[in-house]
Image 1 (cartoon, rainbow, N blue to C red):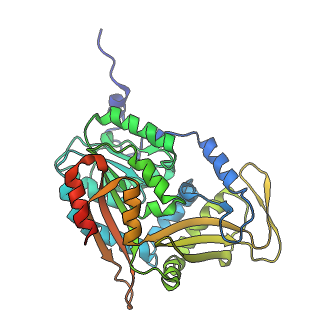
Image 2: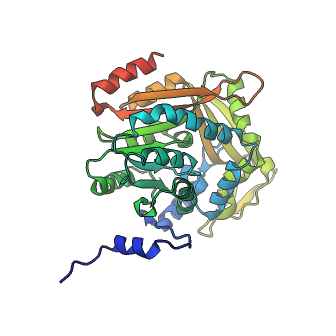
Image 3: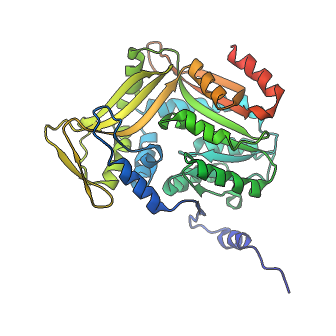
Length: 382
């Protein structure tokens, strides 16, 4: 009696040379649970500062409407933060890649985005590791489908070595399950985890998220972290950081899209506020919808119940940050991460001197050994 052919090999054969845009997806969560979470977040208490009702990070991209809105925003030439980040990444990556391109790493991309950065990484790493796996992870299955097209087609990466995973990686138990699945998939072979595009800054507790991810890193693994940076910590710089996101209508359409598609609230962009604050050796930007109409508003939620929005009430739509060097050092040390390499550059798209830039760090868990610690001392002393 012959051994049965594994289903994955049958699927590879069935989808080979098919012009139809098939994509495989490993769904890790019950989507009804996610909808219940979103509904609960929109029932928060009154707040005139964006600290009550909210759209938490992953839900900004959750669903086909927000995914399309995000794609439109990333293609807007007036979205200068995105433009500068995309242009600088290739320069930064070229300086970091010698640490990982020959180590037989697999790639786990946390928050797939447009896929442009993943394409760059895959193109380089696969030259020396033809058997590597590419595992993009995102809470939005629609973002996964859109974001994996670019690296798979652009880098000509084999579909049979791509495993998109729908998962909210801000939840401890989810990350633990992901780590166990990855260990069964690749054994002791090293993994390069990536958290690029300043994604860390979108979470209310960035230290908690980074600590969750660090907990599952093995000594042989590495984390590629990209964050927005600032050399100034004053209200003028905070206002300028908020204004970066206020310059493009496409970005406003994106941050309001989760409300448009999950409630019956009629969105007027004049009610969207971009607020910059100085926070704990960094800059915090909160993007809020605020009821400045003079009358209370009733908003229907996904479960068809209503919530009252009194005059002055807010819904936080999006959170982002810019990190000082001191805060970034404290954050990585608190999470027991040490930099193997760090590259920083300033934005160059304004006439006047600009305090903002991007930092790309290749991080190792403390268990990686003394070599990483020695490199860290040199990096932080610069």
